[in-house]
Image (tube, rainbow, N blue to C red; front, top):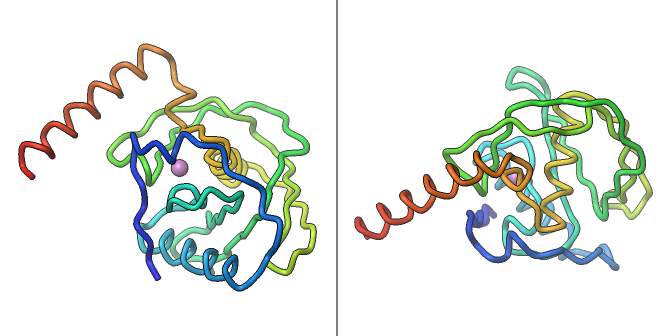
Length: 171
Ligand code: NI
């Protein structure tokens, strides 16, 4: 089932998500829905708080359109090692119609649980490394716009206020 993606400035996006303590049918349903929602959007990653569930669950698929889909499910993900620097443009399904360059680590090693409750370790670079950092940020209530310079953030806020006003005028 495709779930509604919450968008900025929804307060749920600022909250810290809780670790998953039991992986059960509800978790599996959540992950299925998150993957479906991400692919339909389409996006390369989605975190549970973006669909209003404050649990530490993320899904990522950075495979190109002509490649076989490769879904990564990470429960309670933790970055255990990070190095290098990158400065790439990012967007977010919760921040539509906005993109900005964000400073991140170029390489990360992430430890997490899969849906079977087994511990997995992912070594990631490039787009996948960025996606892990972006999605794990969501679990701590951090959006990519929280990483941009104060000046850019002010421009972003104004743009979003204007978009909201326009929406209100229409609706
Ligand atoms: Ni995002």
